[in-house]
Image (cartoon, rainbow, N blue to C red; front, top):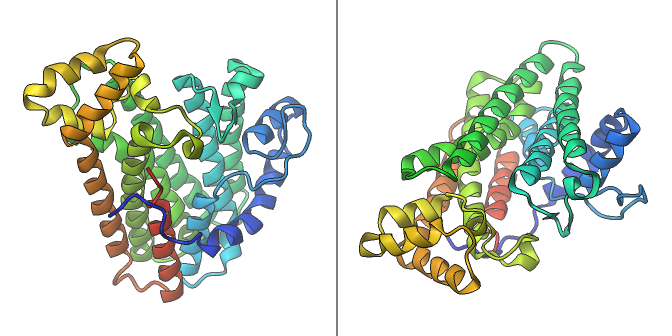
Length: 341
């Protein structure tokens, strides 16, 4: 696997945006005015003063997965719309809170919600998006909406547990590679697993089909997170919208860091000392990045991303899914894991 953007933008992203955005906008319009303004600002729909913004508001990956999961079981894709919108609302709830936790001042090349509106309002906005997601699903007639809400609640609980572990790692004396991978599966894999199966759940698909799509999303999430860890250290700020080596500045124990420490040998003392430095100078930061690569942290993360991408695609075989949707899921998986570092 190479970390370069070689795949064209999958058409399903535009298709999902066209179908899902009105559902999301109608849902967010229910919020009280103060909460609504900050939510719409975060989603990229307006400026802080409410002036509309012309833009797409994000890549729409999770709604696209939800859409394709309905099509994969031969269902009308419109059945997936509450699910795709709900998962995207949960994703954005987590982003708003993550920015507060990490003290990130910029997202998507704009000041974050807490910077513009304050920490308290940012927390409330996240809570509102969380509640709104389940309202959408519980309004779906029949039992499928309840089943989808239960699936999303479970995935959200895992995501929160993963976030808590990620925070705990920042002050942990030592983190194993296995524990790091377990954290990342919960933090990122669970929500992508839900996005990849929620359309099938809303369509009332078989347990076999739902499980195959869920496992596809779980492995895709693990691959996605490994790439995200690479971007957090080696990513181009003009593309990521975040500072150079931002994860190192925040002392985050991501996969490249944990893997490098596990195999650093005689360099471990130097690497550990640098990682423990409260505020790294630019020279120290450059040396830390160099050591992470020399000690194998980068190569381990690349290998992990490739392994889970292969596993994700293997989950789509033999589950009786619609070939056209499988082809689109494959294209989307390749696209989201080929982000340039």
